[in-house]
Amino acid sequence: MAEHIIDVQHLSKTFGTHEVLKDVDFSVQEGDVTCIIGASGSGKSTLLRCINLLETPSGGQILFHGEPITGRGFDPCAYRAKVGMVFQSFNLFGNMTVLENCTIGQRKVLKKSPEEARAVALTFLEKVGMQQFIKAKPHQLSGGQKQRVAIARALAMQPEVLLFDEPTSALDPQMVGEVLSVMRQLASEGLTMLVVTHEMAFARDVSTHVVFMADGVIAEEGTPQEIFDTPRTQASKDFLSRLRR
Figure: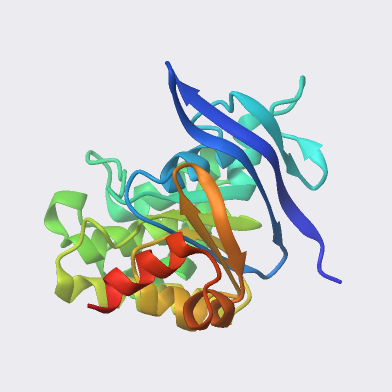
């Protein structure tokens, strides 16, 4: 049986009086491709940001290999090296080249030598088809190219889990395919992925597990076949029917 890498237990998150997440429970196993779907405002991105400690949970806990990530003595920097994140807005360093963007984390966090960091970065830039752009600055790249660099940067840290927060939502339609192609390849290679997405074809065809969120709770979860072919809750039926129109 695959090992649980991440366990979310009774997670809640409140901003002021607004409860964004309410008693959320689910697990991520090694090799899973878990897609989190649902309408805008359902809490999907907040859940991902809590898992990456960009937001502090208001209640409940998140375990990484059984250890609470908000526990005393837990090192968030070391954790984020193992649980990487790809953002919808790329978050590349604009004053650095593509290569520098993909080496700085390795050097600062993993304490790799410049030569080792460069070799690893080139490996992953080649994997995403961006090795010929190593001297370019982000402003010289298209949105799809920026996102592929962001994926290479995250992969260069050689994480156990990679989180994707709507990685195609800021892209022009013609650029979406090139990013999804990279993600499909990573899934086929067994990378553990947790993906917030509006790309239903990707969720249906690539994921091993689908989590449907509505109003801050997990309304339903299961295999892609269960969620897309035989949804049980009215909320999921309504959401999927709107997409089919």
